[in-house]
Amino acid sequence: MDTNIIISEIKKYIENNILAEAVQVNADTNLKQVGIDSFSTVEIILFIERRFGVSIPDEKLVPDNFKTIQALASTVVELMPDAS
Image (tube, rainbow, N blue to C red; front, side, top):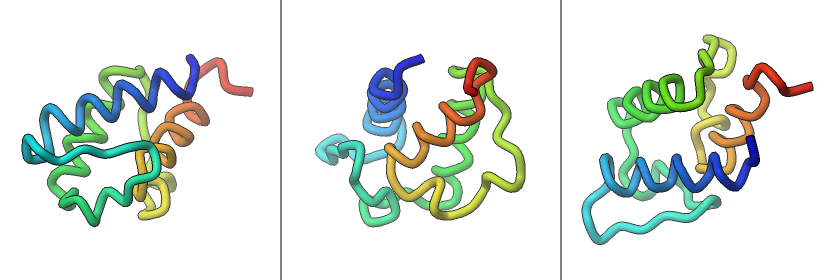
């Protein structure tokens, strides 16, 4: 799956389900600075696992992988079955 599609879907989920209505993010927005906390991070992980059919292992649960939507998408791509 294309990284841009993954970014778009994660962005849409975060804007529609996590953030306040007026808050907009892009692929490089620092998610912590816009109010993403540990509870929100768990919701995002569950969304990613359901939507993209990946399981995020413990070793991938590090702050750098959750800093931006781009970082999240890169992690998803890395975990997808067809990743080489």
